[in-house]
Length: 329
Image (cartoon, rainbow, N blue to C red):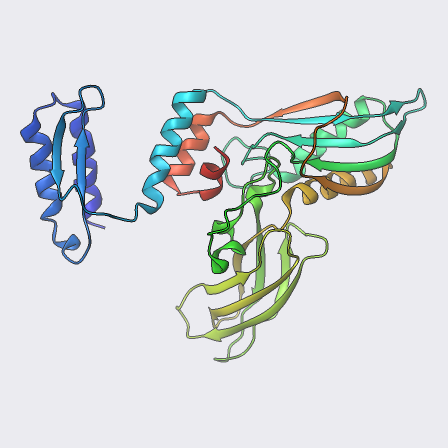
């Protein structure tokens, strides 16, 4: 896109002596860019200390800012929390722990908004399986051998409303429309794999999903389109809905074609994965559950997991336009 160098040039003028004509000249050059002739453009550059208008181009025009607002969200987070801030996730338990290692109570994975927990995509984040290993080791080191209670994903810090009511139905089932909980997992996304077919109009079967999400079912209405048409498949489903429809097209071919969807209930999945990890070493819990509201009672802390620094989270949020990161901030 040719407009990016001009945008960078315009932003770079912030490091030059604030001559108003220089800012205005940059705004004029951007407004004259041929690639924008059929678009809508509005520019207003204001000195935040003096309130002086430095440059403008149709400043009163209303626009849909879309992901440009991520800059405001991330800038606010950096200003309020600092670049070295790290989200915390606590591993806790309640009830009584006997000398023999029997926990008569519940084990909690308590979240406080970390959008990178178990992330497979952010450099420096702990991926899902290594994360579960760390949590399992903390339980073992505490001497817990059996749990007469549940493993619970506690997302009560944010409540149950993970997404706004105005979000579009066609977005919520896809990875970019995943909601934000106090306890997120795997960036609240899953991968859905199709076996491509060689015939136009054929239905490509679903051959796998990862991470595995217990109870998640798909009605596959995807058909095969012409080679090179790309990903035009959409997953339909809202938070907490485990029956989902997949509609649209993927191209013909002979390989595996992957799309990304949203996880219906990340706090519950976190509890299920931790329960499964504990079962591998013989630590059995009676159930897995999620907790979305109420005040926690007295608990004892076993382990604290820290996210990568906020500076890295902000960088990926802006460079790759990650909706979840900004929703969590």
